[in-house]
Image (cartoon, rainbow, N blue to C red; front, top):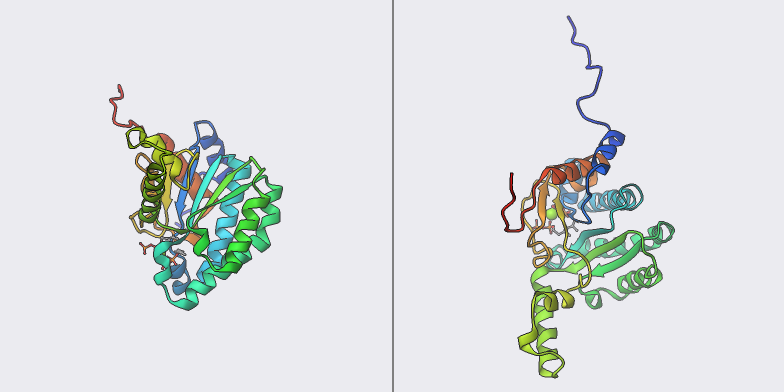
Length: 259
Ligand code: IPE
Ligand code: IPE
Ligand code: MG
């Protein structure tokens, strides 16, 4: 006898998942290492750039969902690392042009959705055309107070800490800061993330289980969630599953929690 499909799907649908995760406290800040674009394209016999283009569409959908449906306050996306300059010139050029394309095609929508865009990373080292578009997006969105979207571009966690150390040393040498008064909050203030809360949840796609120099200071107590899914295939449903898993975890911050 042929087996019949189950009457009720074992996988809750997006609307059900959404209702479930909304019943419990949501993470205030989600960070994502969007990885696997190249492999996604290779699986389809296409150039890596094809994967990056699709990855951008996925990122746009996730941004809209996080801001409009989940109403989470902070989202940080790792778009280009300091180490990514080591890639072939053509791929780097493509990624830089994609950043320009992102601002030109999506800025209006981001503004309509009350998104404030910020960049974590060394903007001054970006090609002039990219810098101009990125800065335009930052300036025109600076009064928005819906989703705070942080794009990590030309970002490296170690380089960020070197930059912070230099800035602190300069301020001490100039008498603006006393070494005795340096504490965790001082350091946090000098980071690109400044006043942002640390990420509660860090998601990495594509089956890689490493941090790749992302937000080293800020993830001291972040919960990690890894998935095999390649970034272009990452869906709203999967984001909801990551959040539901996060909500089941007990965060202890070093203390003892009574059972
Ligand atoms: C992530 O996808 C995008 C960037 C790092 C810019 P990859 O390009 O790293 O894709 P894989 O990991 O090679 O598949
Ligand atoms: C991390 O991915 C950087 C971004 C997602 C922008 P990579 O693909 O560059 O990281 P590694 O090289 O696998 O560690
Ligand atoms: Mg990768």
